Amino acid sequence: MFNLSKKVISAIEAVVYIAYNSSGEPVRSSEITSRQGTPQRYLEQTLQVLVKANILVGVRGPKGGYILAKERRRITLGEIVTIINNSEKLEPTMSSISSDLCKKVITPVWDDLNLIIMEKLNKVSVEDLCLRANTLNVQRNLNSNLDFNI
Image 1 (tube, rainbow, N blue to C red):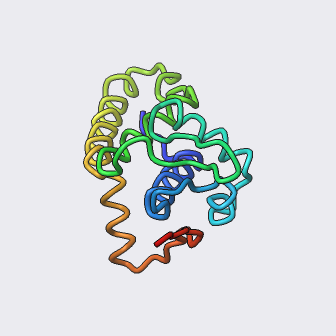
Image 2 (image 1 turned 120 degrees about the horizontal axis):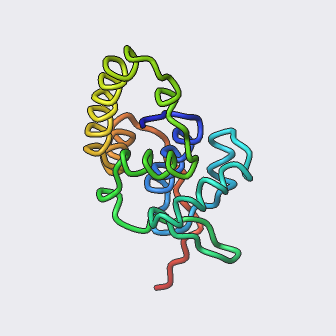
């Protein structure tokens, strides 16, 4: 069931931030949390779920952080929402209601709406959001510690 929790929003924002700002270098979780205003420990748990789901790769070491595990055009919002919601083991609220009206009328309508929402989210890629951010001139925080030898 579709749930747009704070954790889902935080996960989407983190993945898009990494995609938009990485320039091939890992992005530190502390950088993401300073932008989001969320506790680092809270975000780290979410990032680890995304690593296990093969959305991100964690890079260890002093220049470590997170990079995308696959091309940003191959990661959809629907995929991120599903991964985070499944990790939360959310109990559908409609299943606790046992009236005939809810079971036969309201629940099927809600299920249809969830399908429509997820179909739309599965059509939006991280690439789409990065392009949109670029079009809207969202400031990038590209790593300026590049070292060139000629």
